[in-house]
Length: 104
Image (cartoon, rainbow, N blue to C red; front, side):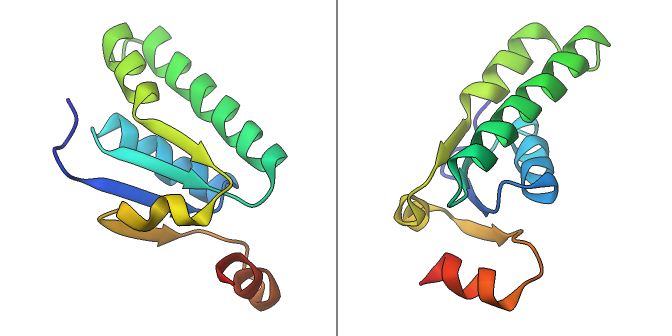
């Protein structure tokens, strides 16, 4: 159930960013999750997948819905990949230096 033409970009793969991404994919949005740290993206992807598995195991969502949700998640190190997002949510750590570095 993809929401046609509605793509969310999330900048920051930490706890907040991955939580936002998880909620969005379960709600049917395509999500591009960006972080400049490949380890952070890996952890985010693994954490989201585990959370989806828990939702399925508790019968909160069906196996098909869980698989569909995970198929709507794309992780990227390239900020330019978010250029086609309908809107972008910034969820980077509260550090001015880090935020400036992320967008430059």
